[in-house]
Image (tube, rainbow, N blue to C red; front, side, top):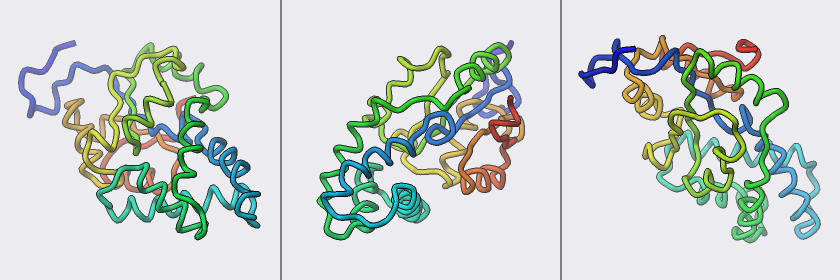
Length: 207
């Protein structure tokens, strides 16, 4: 493989058939962590909705802030999303949630899939998270494959689906979007990344 000498030449890349993954609820089961958090605080605030409803609504609140391109950390956005849903809640409760991130696990079958893909592809991650939250997850300790780079919203200075987040990936890999496979399980991410020009796939497409 030839390494690019011109940073602006998108046809020359040092990477082999790159695949970029969304992280949470695509590779890692983030929803289960939020459900555990729900059961920790449900009695305290006498929450009457179900755990699944809680997760869906707090994610919806997060997405509203992210789509508005709010210039706050994901931790701050999560606090706002939590107190918007549970009006009487203490925003510092979310520290209990973040402490659970270290126990987040890959979905069944993901590790085997990554091992197979690594033979012919270079693997990347693009995620809407802060670096300290990503550190809690500890991808390197859990994954048998090495991701060439993990792009966080903190490092990018913006959240996806802002096209700037996708463009940062393209500029780094130095290939046209259509030659980069992008994998997500989140409907809004699938839609916007496809509009951007990525070759969008679902996990089942790769199996």
